[in-house]
Image 1 (cartoon, helix red, strand yellow):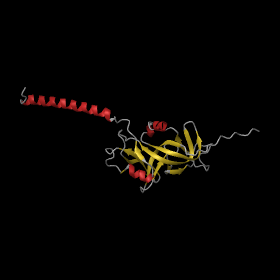
Image 2 (cartoon, rainbow, N blue to C red; image 1 turned 90 degrees about the vertical axis):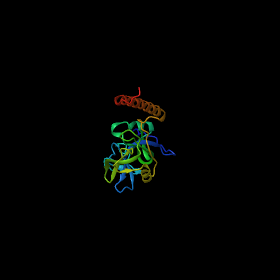
Image 3 (cartoon, helix red, strand yellow; image 1 turned 120 degrees about the vertical axis):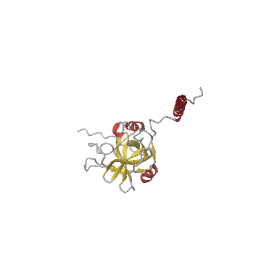
Image 4 (cartoon, rainbow, N blue to C red; image 1 turned 180 degrees about the vertical axis):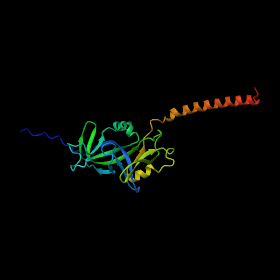
Length: 219
């Protein structure tokens, strides 16, 4: 009888780092930050440090080889950011995590048992401008409300939470992603100058026509 070949075990001195897309959450009493997955685990909240449970309620430890349970992350930050272009993930957050405990490596990243969130990037506001605070997303799971990034203009009249407040609750840095729709300063200033010049020329023309109609135009 030929014995089964065992896969080589990895024992890294430093925990692997991964990136994943997630929803931001805050507890009902407002004193605890959390996260939720965007696919299999979207109904299960987890904290900054968390251990995976089987999403199907099975009693085995995650990640089980014959199940698809466990936390997932990508090894490439660029690839994770690319996921945020997908329609249903457009307003999710990007997390940087330390991969802890046992894990299964696959071609794009890891499926693993424990993680620690070490950084949060908030996506752009729905209007396309960079987010400046977090507001109630109108979503959530049991005991926790969903949050989404918003600019101050779109946040008027909505319950909001500053990045600093969420960072203190989560004990990790929280920053806003740069909006892909906002022009750089070097591109924006010439455009504004040209628009102002055009508006001034139109205003001068209107004043000239008005002067002729009122008979006050010296020409």
